[in-house]
Length: 171
Image (cartoon, rainbow, N blue to C red; front, side, top):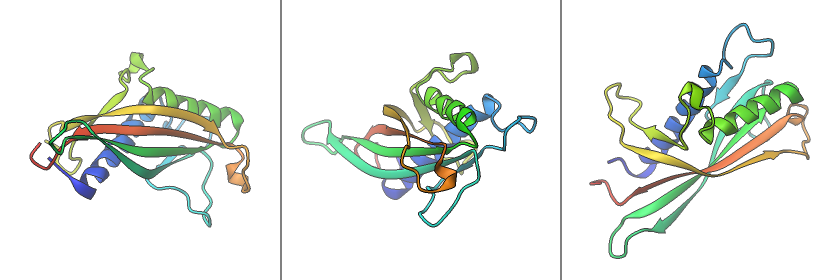
């Protein structure tokens, strides 16, 4: 079992890959779309940066831990994930943000995204088995109303907790 920083990286990389796959399945990266290309970034936008329209940026924040079993290291971990969506206009931004939300909530059953969890495996190993599943919990959908930069005009934020349980590197 992976632990420490490598485990957190695996979870975030797999969450990114899962969402990217879902948006690809829905056609968001198709060349013949009538809007600007959608691009995903595994990092947040810093205060001195700007982004192109239809950008999706991941931001990993805090980790919370709750003991599951008395007398052992087994605990439930929650990683806070924020996904910022910067649309080119209200219609595209809302549509894109709504699809991200519903993908994470397992509402696209017709295209195979019907779960509120995703598999975590070692993305550097093409033969890696699924190590465990990470639950998507406490999802919130917010619209930024106090933007100070032009590219933030159509900015939505989706936050959720990525939840998993483990005890140590022998699990």
